[in-house]
Length: 69
Image (cartoon, rainbow, N blue to C red):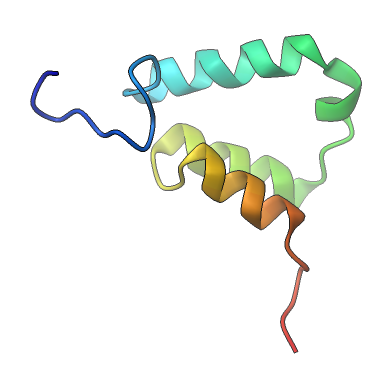
């Protein structure tokens, strides 16, 4: 793979534009689920597109409690 390849994103989601496309494709497959996303989850998606989080990170944070004891 090219230098700069980050395996946490996979081969089709290396750039912000590619991650945005992947997210749009997922949203298109289940628009009701993604339409109901809270502001918190929308921010997680934005962080994924920006490259701050991997998709497994987004999923884990989305499912985690909003606060820890």
